[in-house]
Image 1 (cartoon, one colour):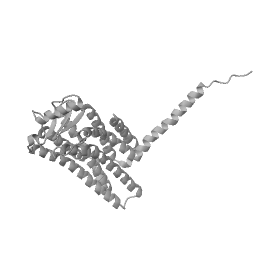
Image 2 (image 1 turned 120 degrees about the vertical axis):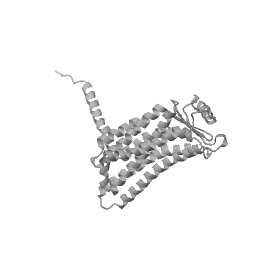
Image 3 (image 1 turned 60 degrees about the vertical axis):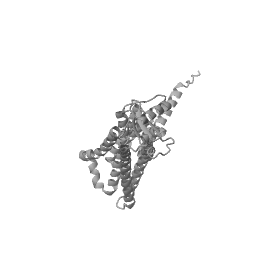
Image 4 (image 1 turned 90 degrees about the horizontal axis):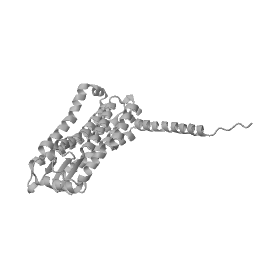
Length: 315
């Protein structure tokens, strides 16, 4: 889909047009774009669905497999962890440039990789062991009937669900699971926000670097902020609403129907924003298009000229 095409285009731009001054930050951009390609393919393969009926929240996929849908949901914890790493790089580049060399260290890279892996693992285990959906439940029946109404097919198995108030009883395990999901999202956003705030503060305070370097730092910071805004709006806010609204008996409106639609759009918009905001990528890709047009016009002119009749000699 569009997410694959746009992120492949971004990967090409990163490889072709990234200046050497960005250093190892190029690898971070590459990892993020490559993971967006992966998320797009995963979404197309899994075909997830979110259904909310009253105080019952459920997620299922076309394969009707709890482990598959749990794996899918857990994968979306990774982008925000990656954003925190991006902000860490930007913060160090302006505040502690001597530490940037650590990003070239395999040990430090392994240390950073542990954070998205831990976040993914915790979310996956919560989905499998804290949520319900394996046995016979009244909430599961409601979700199955609703799936038949919405999708034209009754999905009976493969649900991960949270029936918060089954038989008007408070379920502590599901409540703690909800708090755990919220904590993961809030902590991820808080870390990114804190690093972002500190980065902006020291960019404004910087007086020992050239104006050109300062402008580059500011542009990269704006790009990272915009890239953070995308998963926040398209993934975390919908996730947060879908998980919490049923517990508080809040009206869901179209939250469940829009949740996966927005999630599927996230990788494409991520790439669009980076291409637009990163001047080197934007101008490089536009330059490729402009180079092709004159060549096409020249070919057309030559073809037209060769088809023109030659004047005959008049004796």
